[in-house]
Length: 431
Ligand SMILES: Cc1ncc(COP(=O)(O)O)c(C=O)c1O
Image 1: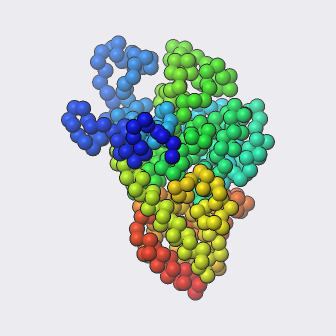
Image 2 (image 1 turned 120 degrees about the vertical axis):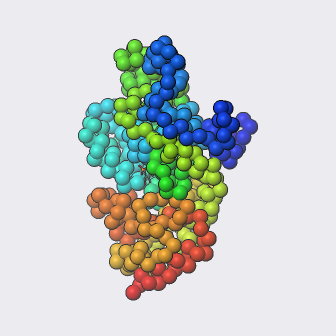
Image 3 (image 1 turned 180 degrees about the vertical axis):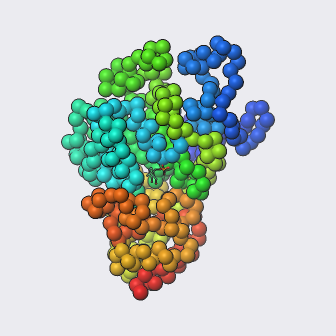
């Protein structure tokens, strides 16, 4: 793992970054600033805040102290320069692209993605005039061939939902770099504990913090983290950042804020106008969740690999797609990019197809049938009839979510109990 801090390692930063003891009260647990607005010292102070000439808080749609602590923690853990926390993972995807895109412009998107993201980018973005061009995740040359003068970003998941697919991050980052556009990576499934995409040449990282980061399925959220390294200054492809902004007295974000330009824009314009801000309560839950992230992810990963090995040998199972299995075509990429574990979400195919799959969902006892991942509880889902149901048959196959596919998100329970539960459900799925 890359050295994120001159003195402290990842586990220490997960606990301490962004959350020093409260200077006023000494409170050790970071407080929830459950407030929407902040008193100005005087008229000049208000003016300097509104002109972006002084740091500080105005209104919680733009910034809030608890949300800012989460931004600092996550930017630190990803090795980024700045972060912008959002109301959900989907909001983070749109917020990440907002400073980069304009009507008629294109984003190149990997085709193995969470189904909701395929919909968002493939369908809803058309209403903004943004065009998503889907290419094969497994083939970096397809990304290269898709680059045009209108390309403004490349978007991938490094470990794709619903599971088992690892992207060749370094090769795709090289394509983005040569094309002069930022690579945006959704790191939800790996978390910064397993992978830090900025290390491999990505420019921007997004997360659904709803999953492993908050960790217990109780707080929706997202984040956008910027490396601070992309050259916006004087770059005519990105006028939002490189040209004067009339609403802020003609300041140019890239000139005034340097390596914080993208993050400042995301607060001062994107959050201000789109309003997809996170509540302080959710930010607080997520801050607490991240403190135990390393411990949880280690258990998630070891449990998941053991369950995958069990399923691979089970006579009721057709195949298992988990990048930690030697049989996986992504095994080598997994070893390179995710040496400490390939996550806890993966898919398998049940013998007997659709009917047997549904029967399994109804007979598991410990596994909960829900549309979520990254919970301490083990979860089970049939993507084709739920999260991926808006996709065409062809998109379902491409996304690894065909009719017989079951997705598991393995929790942190006793692994032998999980295996026994799946075993009895597989036996009953035969009948
Ligand atoms: C990889 C990935 N990205 C983004 C999202 C969207 O996140 P949210 O549900 O927080 O909007 C999800 C949701 O499942 C996801 O799995």
